Image (cartoon, rainbow, N blue to C red):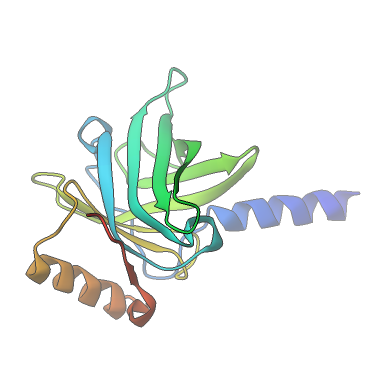
Length: 170
C-alpha cells in the first residue's frame, strides 16, 4: 500500500514539474495577467486537436486561485468547445509557476517562462515537459518579427518548434 501511495504521489508531482532549463518569470502580477489571451501557436495535443479561434480567459476565484476558461472552434463539428479549469500557484504568487486542472484532482504545470513585463501583451507557456508549448497574445495576431523571436527562443530552449501549429484566429 505504501508503495502504491508513493507511486501515485510521484506521478502527480511529475505533472507539476518543470522541464530542464525552463525558468518561470519573476515579478508576475496576477491582476495584469487576468483577462483574455489569444492562442497564436501551440504544440499539438489531443485536447486541442482541430480547434481554431482558441482563447484562454483568466479570472479570480473566491478561493484565491484562478478560473481558466479555454474556448475554441471545432471546425469538423462546426461548434464551439469550452473547458473550465482552475489554477493555483505552486510557489510564490509573484512567480509565473502554476498548476492547472481541468479534470478533477489531476493537475499539470503551467509555467510562464517568457512574458512582456511592460505591457503583458504576450506570454510563452510550458507544461510539465517540452511537448507542451503555447504562445499567447492579447490580440488575435502578433507582430511577425516578435513571433519569430519568441519561436527562436523556444527552439533554443529545446522545444520542437518545427511542430508548432499556428492557430487561425480570423
